[in-house]
Image (tube, rainbow, N blue to C red; front, top):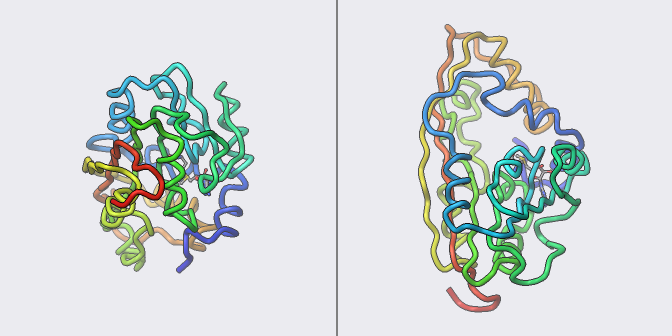
Length: 241
Ligand SMILES: C[S@@+](CC[C@H](N)C(=O)[O-])C[C@H]1O[C@@H](n2cnc3c(N)ncnc32)[C@H](O)[C@@H]1O
């Protein structure tokens, strides 16, 4: 199995945004339950931020919904930056391990489904803390290890949880933030036909190689299990937890 934090793999995967867009569950399946991105947007809106960073913005879909006067975006992929700019947002190429902003520049940082791709997560999380004001907030949507478990088990990929997930995320964030809250989100996805599930799985071709939709009776259902991390009050660099 591939390591999702491998730099070359990440670079190849996001050279275009086609597969990223295709992996959105609502493009191929029917969703039930809460949407973690809405909870993340609420967690941002709750502090009334003036300036927000979306770190690893992908196609900019999330950033476009953030309620703040100024929203800046970064991504290591040029294709992602172009897709985000095409939505009228301000975006630039940058690595979350070395953010091109001064200390205390943002009221909030969002970083959804990025940290499992980052070789030095501790550095990236410390960067988020550094660029936040002392009362700043970090918000991030990530997966629980059992997210879509029925699907990955059917494909014999059941043990391959993301490197950064609901189990290890709180501890890693707590190294740079005073408080870390985990907001759990459950739901379901239903693929009506095998072709729809195959289209979803094809979006993983670069990350995992070819995957074949299970030959079972359809619709195929899998439980979604996501978390929204809400981390407040960055610790100053060098301070002990
Ligand atoms: C799974 S996508 C998530 C995109 C977006 N946050 C979303 O929720 O749709 C991961 C994104 O992180 C970006 N990325 C990966 N490693 C990065 C790094 N070290 N610095 C900045 N962006 C990175 C990728 O280019 C890609 O756009």
